[in-house]
Amino acid sequence: MNADFLLLSLLNGLSYGLLLFLLSAGLTLIFSLLGVLNFAHAGFYMLGAYVAYALAGAMGFWPALVVAPLVVGGLGALLERFLLRRVHRMGHVPELLLTFGVLYLIVEIVQLLWGRSSVALTLPDTLQGSVFSLGGAQFPRSRAFIMGVSVLVLAGLWLVLARTRIGLVIAAARTHPDMVQALGHNVPRVFMGVFAGGCGLAGLAGVLGGSVYVTEPGMAASVGSIVFVVVVVGGVGSLAGAFLASLSIGVMQTLAVGLDVSLASVLQALGMALTPQAAGEPVLVLTLAQLAPLLPYLLLVCMLLMRAQGLMGTGSSANKRMY
Image (cartoon, rainbow, N blue to C red; front, side):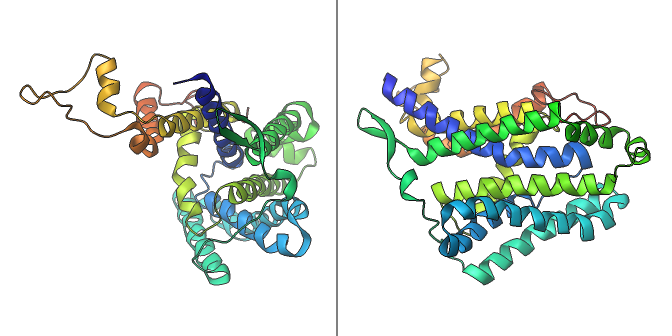
């Protein structure tokens, strides 16, 4: 493994990990305040990509980048106000079933409007090409753009939650809603705003992910399970934990895909090779690239066995923290 390959793989892994964080941050905010695991979150991610595709043809990519997350956030506010709020008092199971049904409803609506094939969400000329190249391989501007936007969102979330009155009200509404209501704040409206903001972040991640990777009806399923892995590994309710877990999973998967080595050779390097006595050939012929999609779930299992509360979790459902 040369230094150029390692650097490019690291940057690609960071860009993918930051995209995962942008998606998981909204889910973390929603759960930390409302206590709702929003199964429809990946659907809002996909919806953001398709809304941006529809708007980009009329107004261009840059306006669509701003408007699409606002549209998705507005749809999230409607979901919380007219559907989720009605079943919230009934417990977690009705909430999960409702959001699970909304996810499939979004998928079917997208297929009815835009078909089952992929669509091209084209990037503007300023995001085409590469930032630099190493050893013949290039690092695209689009991935650098994802990294920049994700870092700005992370900084903005930290400033809002930790340094503003809005963040204070949000934190207090989760732990002392009656007191916040007595001080004149509309707690249900705060809940709706946070839910809309979380869905808007998913929509923003969809615009970026759909433009850099692919926009198609299966994109919700491709990231839906991984985003929950990120939230659990990082610690349910912790934005800092979601950030660390996202980067870890992104770098781990990217390095595994880039390494063209067999699992048997890796085990042999660790002194754990499995070889039959007669033939002397490795039993395991799988490569790390083939196992890359399984690595996040393997990390999830290991984390649950060794530290069930996650990297930055408190382990207490009664004291979920937002940062």
